[in-house]
Length: 274
Image 1: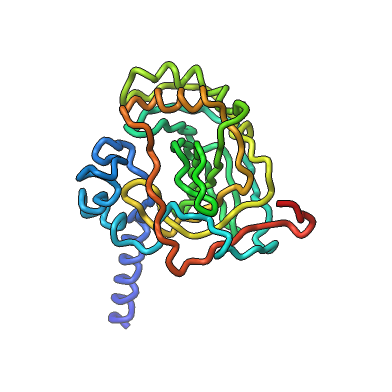
Image 2 (image 1 turned 90 degrees about the vertical axis):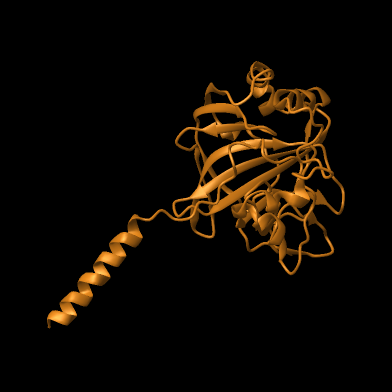
């Protein structure tokens, strides 16, 4: 009897300790100065996995992002369901992380729901040119909306842009981007920003399992790339790059191998258009 009670006590202690240990966080680095996007640099994309042991997945992972959204491999389906966005306005800050500008929603700004799991919207940032390509074509700008579930799984919504008419959300952000253009590592209060201002304009999207596109390149990230390519003005594109102020023309990771992963395109049954 004593032995049974003793074993139960050990089990309780083990469970308690386990519950107190935080789960591993799949999180992009806040300081991006240790790596570069220059493919000829010893700290460039081909060598990210060598800079720190905890970044090794950047080199050895087989589910890395970004990828080419090639229609030769895509499986069209109506079973994934609409992208369920339940966003809300929240206080934000803007910071130059080294190679990009990150908009952070303090305490989160609502959620998306994927396969019954709720993912809180935490931050957004831009890449120029796009990291993902469609049938080999690279566009001018990519916005990443980064979400995290309560058990710290990550889901990213990506929106691609080409040169054209100005984007209304970026117009809202322009004064803050300009204010940070000559600073580094300064987190500036922006105020309340409603993520519903970020227009998607299409119910169709690509879905696949990949990774963070910056170190530590952690995998098992759920990627949702909106099918519609939206527009951004050339002047807006210039302001985003000038705000980063890293003397580089690009902050896009090269396309990674799809390997044996599935790639799906969600199209509602009532939507037969491209």
